[in-house]
Length: 229
Length: 302
Image (cartoon, rainbow over all chains, first blue to last red; front, side, top):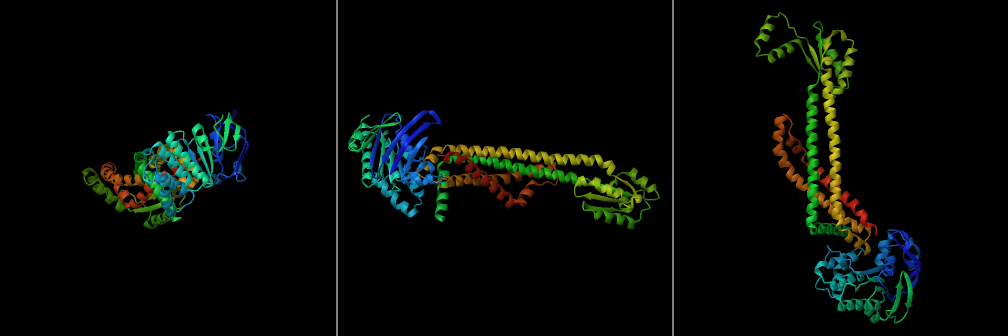
C-alpha cells in the first residue's frame, strides 16, 4: 500500500517554487495506475518520491506503513530493490552489456552466479532480447533499450513497477509493446504506476487514471479511466 | 564472500579494459607521478651521500706537547672513547706523523732536505677525533678543555676549523631541509595530479554510478570495483616505472659517479630492488585506491 499524505515538494530548496502542492493519494497493492498531465504537472516528482530520490518538503510518503523520510541511508538500497523503475531515457549502464545490465540488478540483491546465469537469459528472452545478450546499449534500438530497461526492472521480482514516460522515446508499435508488457506484469500481481502524457496508451489501458495539473491532483478516475485533463 | 570478491575484481578488470583510452591516460599520469617519486628518491640518496661525504671529512685533531707520554695520551684517548658522542679516536704517534708527512711530500726535495737537516722529529703526537654528528665537535672540545690532562695538550685544531665545520653543518642541514621540503611539495603536486585524473575518469562514469544507486546498489557494492580499478591503474603504473627506471638508473649512474666518486646510484637501487619495487607498488596502489575512494563519494549522494 502506497500513501501520499498532504505531500508538497519544492524546487532546489526554494519555497517559492512548489512542484507538488498538498497531494493526497492512496494506491493499493496490485493496482495499475496511470498518472497523466502536461509536462511540469509533477508526475515524475511523484515517482521520484517513492524511490527516495527526493524527499517531501511537507507531508508524508508512506510505503507499507513506513514513512520514507524516516528510513536510514543504508535502507535506501533495500527500498529501491522492492521497486523496479523504467525511465523515458532508459538509464542503462552504457559500459555494460544487456546481460550485465540485468545481472547488476540481481547482484545488488545478493543473487548468486548460478541464479544470475539462469534467470537473466530467461527474462531477456521474454522481452524479445534473447539474441542480444552481449550487445551494449548503444548497439540496441530505442524499443530494444526500453525492453532491456523493463527486463532490468523486473528481474528481482519487485512488488512495484514505476514507469516514467516509458513510451516517450518510442514509436507507436514499440510503445504499445511496452504497455502490453506492463499490463502482463500487473496481471501477475505487481503494482504498476505509469506516468505518461500519451493519450492513446492511457485510453487503451482503461484502468485507474489520475490527472495532475500544476502539482495537484485534479481528477481521479478509479475504474476504466480515460485521458482527461 | 569469495564469490563477491571475485565479482569485484572481475567488474574492476572489465571496467579497466573497456575504458582503455581513459585507463591508459590515467595510468600514463601515474607513471609520470611514480617516476617523479623515483627521481626524488634518487636525489635524496645523492644528497645524503654528499652530506655524509662532507661530514666524513670533518674531524678534530688534538696535538700533544712533546713531554706527553704515550700512556697519558692513551688515557685521554680512552676518556674520549667513553663519550657517547665520539665515533672513533685515532692515535698518531710522532714517528707515524713524520713518516706520513714524508710520504705526502715525497716529491718535494726542499721539504725532504729541510727534514734531513733537523736532529729531531719536529712533529707532535696527536689524536684524531671523529664525532657521530658534526654538531657534537663543540661539546667534545669543551670536554677536552676540562680534562685533567689539559696541560699536556698543545693545541686543538677545532678553533681553526670551527668556521669550516659550521659551514659544512649549514650546507648539510640546508640540503636535508630543502630536500625534504621540495620532496614534500612535489609529492603533494603528484598526489593532486593523480587525484584529479582519477576523479575525471570517475566523473565520466557519474551517470552510471547514479543509475547503479537507483537500481538499488549499496554504496560498497558500487564503490568496490572502482577502488579495484584505481588500484589497477597504480599497479600497472608501478610495473611500467620499475621496468623503465632500472635501465635509466644504469645509464645515468656512471655519469653521476664521474662527478661524485663513490656514489653509485645503480648500486643503491640494485641492492634495495625488492624494497624499492614493493614501495613503488605500495605508493601506486595506495594513490589509485585513495583517489578513487575520495572521487566516488561525491557521486553516491542520490
